[in-house]
Every structure is written in C-alpha cells, then in structure tokens.
Image 1: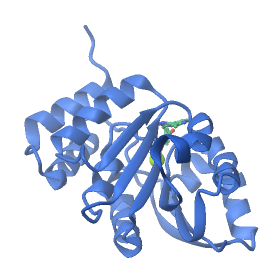
Image 2: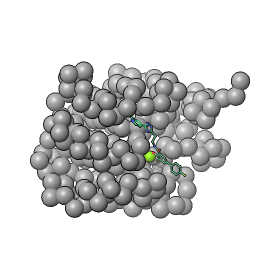
Image 3: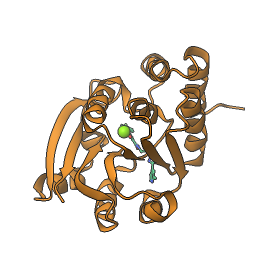
Length: 214
Ligand SMILES: Cc1cc(-c2n[nH]c(CCNC(=O)c3cc(-c4ccc(F)cc4)cc(O)c3O)n2)ccn1
Ligand SMILES: [Mg+2]
C-alpha cells in the first residue's frame, strides 16, 4: 500500500534520529524535507525565530494550533521548563497519528497533550477539559482563515492574559491578511513582523509576534 508523506517523514525520523534526542528529530525532518519531499513544517529558518520567541517567553502553558507531523511541537516542547505543558490541536486524524509517534520518538510525550479536532470546537472547552487558566504562548499554524476568528474566540474565552504572546506562521504565504490587519491595527495588541521564507524555499514568508495588552 502507498505510504503517505507524513508516514515517510516518520520513517525518516525513525531511521535517522536518535530516540530521546529532539534536536536529531528536527534535523532528520529538515533534511528529508529539504532533500527529498517538501512538507509544511515551520522549517529550520522560521524554526530558529520560533525558538528565540519560546526562549524569551519561557512559557508555562503553550497552545499550538495545527500539529501536522509534530515538527514545531518538538521544537517548542524541547525548550520548555520542567513542569510546563504544551497542548497541540490537530484536525486531521492521520496527521495526529504520525505526530504522536514523532513526539514519542523525541521523548517529549510527558510535556505534550495532542488533541484531535477543530480549533473552534476545542478552544471553548480548554478550561474545563485541561484545567488551563490562560496561555502564555499561542503558536498559530493551522487553517490560515481560522487565525482571526480563533484569536477572537480565545479572547472571549479569557484564555489570554496581559502579556500573552501570539506567534503566527505563514502570515505572508499562504497568508492571513485579515489576521495581520487585525493585530496590527488593534490597540489591544503590540505586533512585530519577523521576515523569513516559506519553509525549504526562497519564497517570502514570515512570523507575526503579537503581545496581548489586556
Ligand atoms: C485544530 C485545527 C487544526 C487545523 C490544522 N491542522 N493542521 C493544519 C495545517 C495548516 N497549515 C497549512 O495549511 C500550511 C500550508 C502551507 C503551504 C501549503 C502550500 C503552499 F503552496 C504553500 C504553503 C505552509 C504552512 O507552513 C502551513 O502551516 N491545520 C485546522 C483546524 N483546526
Ligand atoms: Mg505553517
């Protein structure tokens, strides 16, 4: 039976990365996606920007929207302090099944809770289901037209506090124009654009970091 691209990414991890070594998992996926098959991981260039924001925020609670194969999940979780928690939402069950195995190979399953379903359904249930008060960091990397409605939903559900950081991938390619306009014009956010490139390509893309001012 034909394998899927996520399955081939998992195979590359299991062949080339060391169990329990998150950096080797990240390296194996980047090598596969740069040399064999492109895939929609945040990638190494934007990944370094992600790493610097995670290290600066040093979050106790993280929400990731859009897990895919778990590449950014592994990057983020490997930088978290000992008792910090990362909740990651994935809509596609096939992606989720692969991501669980990638996260396990990196040895980070204790820091990560992968939840399957749509962001719009799960965001209102975060507090009751996972005992979350607010998120210190949110990494938006899911459906690009969901960035804005889901940000408004997180505000309504009081999941953001003064100083919460939103970091959004793909604000140029594929693009999230309504989201960009909102966070850049709203008095309740302080936004900053980190220019970069679409993963594994020369196409412009970037990350938008927005601090919620409360
Ligand atoms: C909880 C929940 C989760 C989701 C959800 N889970 N997983 C995703 C994936 C979303 N990601 C992308 O579509 C994406 C696309 C490109 C791309 C593609 C093709 C091109 F030509 C150029 C660029 C590049 C990227 O970096 C991307 O991140 N959504 C959806 C809803 N609710
Ligand atoms: Mg992305």
